[in-house]
Amino acid sequence: MRDEPETLGGHAPAACRHGGRSPRTMRLAVGTVFFVTGAAFATWAARVPAVQSRLDLSAGELAVALVGLSGGAFLGLPLVGGLVSRYGSRTVLCAGMAAYLGALASLPHVPDLAVLTAALALFACGNTAVDVAMNTQGVLVERAYGRPVLGGFHAMFSLGGITGATAGGLAASAGVGIRAHFTVAALVLLVVAGAAATALAPDPPGAGGRGRPDPLLALPGPGLWIPGLVAFCALMGEGVVNDWGAVYLKEETGASPGAAGLGYAVFSAGMVIGRLTADRLRARLGTVRFTLLCALLAGAGALIPILAPTTQAGFAGYALLGLGMAAVIPLVFAHAAALRPERTGSSIAAVSAVGYVGFLAGPPVIGALAEATTLRWAMLVLPALMAVMAALAPRLRRT
Image 1 (cartoon, helix red, strand yellow):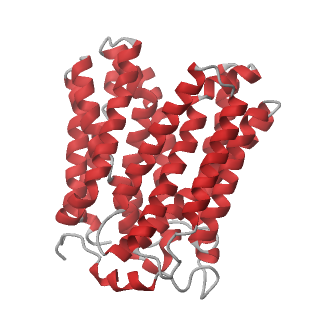
Image 2 (cartoon, rainbow, N blue to C red; image 1 turned 135 degrees about the horizontal axis):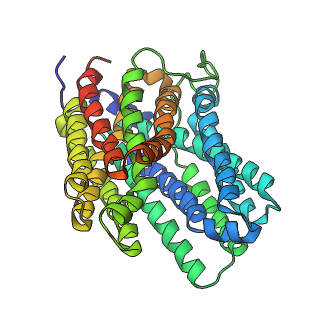
């Protein structure tokens, strides 16, 4: 089977059956949800030091609280796909968004470490529900358009993250307390998400309790392991850059703390640019060739700061890493949904679950390897992951 340029024209006539909503209206609504989701998470991330200070948590105690964040997300993923199948992506998205933003508003009010851990687990579960449901909505909009648009939605998530982090930094600089900040942010984002929810894409027949639903526990089935492993490579790489990218620049290239932090900003900018341009390239190149291009760009970006450990080379490498890794997740989500169009939510959840294992495993793997060798040698994991992704790309054609 040839890797044809990706079009979804066979689904285009369905656009006129979306409850009277135009594809453009649905696209704006789903893009808004992605933006809100990114902004909400960045609101928390930007004020973690303030939450830590309020409860007088040590670094170890904060790490315990963050286990709630990762554990809640990981445990929720296999369940969400079944919920989307049983109740529909719109219902799950609305319920998940209420839990997500409600948990955000509660974080400044928790009295101790145990309650903070529980609140972060709820925050992560809500985020997971929204993540799977909004990606399901993104696939429905793609089908209405008849061409790739999912990468643009992920760009909106990144832009929301930049906006939320900027607002958080400004609030912290102005001395705004986290109670006022989180409450206002949660209310504003809830109003925006609520308005967007009125124009979401209707779920197809068979969702929301019509027809035979998927099992509640969504695990990878036939055909989904390859896109799941591609997601594993991409998210493991992203987790490594998130947790070790700045450390590498500081320890191995001699970058100042400010420059090391700027390296992550360069990586994030590459992600945004890559996601904004991904849809047109994916439509032109097709799944296999586009995945290969992503792997090659990211692999080159990973090698540059290892072969030339300077701050400038690190910036160049991180920019290429961001560009290469930006579109892999929307690509595999769309591919998985196309494999089982009648089970979009459970397919996305199953691929996400495999990918998230990589996201959680990457940082400790690097830490263990760095302890046994050096951080520079440990970071060879990144180009190795991209090589595995390139090797898996041709098998996407046959799944």
